[in-house]
Length: 345
Image (tube, rainbow, N blue to C red; front, side):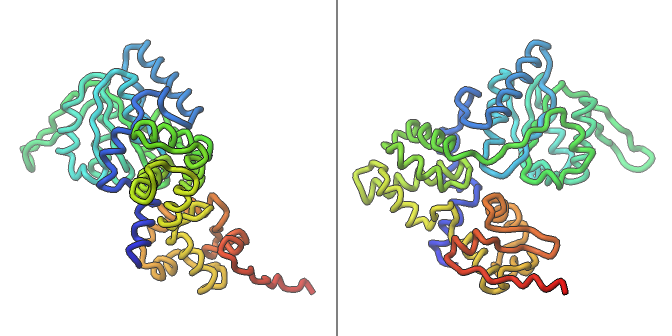
């Protein structure tokens, strides 16, 4: 795969790149009023936060689910800010044993929030120890071996667990049932993404025309993280190839260089659709076959590329495999085949 394709792929994967983390922190809103989009979810969270503050108790355990880049981590930071408590952050795969979990939990004070990203990737042992922590606010520690073993019950301060997952189906039923608040974040409409782009441009002091901000938002796959990334890269092109202002012409030029087309598809998306259409006659074709043909893990296809293609109607999942839709043929400029439906008699 070419370096240009790798670059475009990194931009649209929805995961933060190393050189973007500093900007992600500065662009994160700290209050509900500054958070653009997800209005129903925000209204509900405001009620839950106000109710917890009136009771002078911790917020109920919260689970945020949805594709990457939509604001799950940001909302956890806002919850802590609105509640006026401390926030401890961890990642599911990073908590390798219950000793690490105990170290996190014992540092929490009353009402504090523990945020675990990719919570579906917790190991079974850690997850089982988390059950008693979130229900009874205690953690059991076994000391000694054999007949001399003893269980020490370590009490915890009442706290709030906030989990984030991109794959709700991988959460076990016991874990899912522990959350009193379950909220799903959806892809953003273009109008709200344009607001995100305009806000980010103000914070980064990037001169951008309204039409150019909307054009960048239109191609950002409904994801705020991607619109911020495209905005910063458009700024680079504007500073080097122009006068520093992002107008429609410069936005279109930058997006063309990044290989992001009018539908928000990058080169990897188009390659996926071309393989289905050209190699397998539009499908159906199994996901394992596609993973081998694209030299990508199956999880990457299912978590990164397919959700947007499915949502936009370029791809269909059937019992027999993936199929390209008529819209995919039209987008790639390929004439769809005449499918033989067979005769009844």
